[in-house]
Image (cartoon, rainbow, N blue to C red):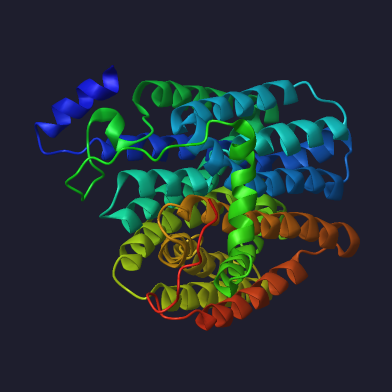
Length: 431
């Protein structure tokens, strides 16, 4: 097998195969991020071609974001049951199929079914939970850094793809842009099938930073038990206020990032006379700063109190959104916003994953973070629909920006309610 041979070759050079798995995951999440980001360039073209109301289009995107989040805990369970490689390959096939069929849609309900349900399920299986699962299984040391890299690929990819997709949409139509997305996802599937493996033990290695090879935990092979395990985990942590603080703050994270800015940015800038390609390019600048900011956040999360990191991340993001809502969208004002907001786009993810692992234990970290991530996407869906509502009924996005900014300030304060890491008792996990 390619992976086993590569692992032996790398071991002879003091390199760990976990970095190959991490790189494959990075590129996979980057590719699926293109599918997520492409939704942002479709709103106006679909409105113009079919005459669909922006609020109706936004509702389909909201369904996608909800499923993107709600599938998180079940994705972790499926990865435990079927293996990362098989789950990710199936998810990529779903995304490609949904996009290809959507090239021929003519009704709003078809948009909801394909982009809301099919693509929502597919992207939900390859979301941040995938990165968290890979980092937890393959890395004992440098885990925060790896999570930062994974998060950066997911979030930055959604932004950096936009200028190219917007340019193709403007020149050749939205269908051509989606065809490019399908090609990128197909390339990612090839990498997954060739290089992805489920556990370090599959290639005879310990996790990075450990010395002993650990056998994968035994799994109940009953599908019903697999489907029930996320619900059992949710029941076991629901009584712990730590879980709800993480869930609530991540709700705000989604509310203030991909649900609002990623989904509606081109339309927001269009209200100020900015062309779609220019607006998408500005979003790409945010993505570039996000890439470095998120990796740096992962580095910080390995070294500092993650509660205080979240306090500063949410607080600064809230201030940047309020600043944007009061600005005139000039070049200088957008540049200032792009830098501060970009550095903080999803810098909250590495500290949140670390806190979840510290509070609830390594074995259940993926499932617990899956539910926390569900909160993120419920917040994103709320913003996707809510911003569309403000635009349709009041012809402005500014209230949505201001509400998101205020919610970030509340999240910054609430995270300080968490006890110092190590001082809280881990909640017993149900079998």
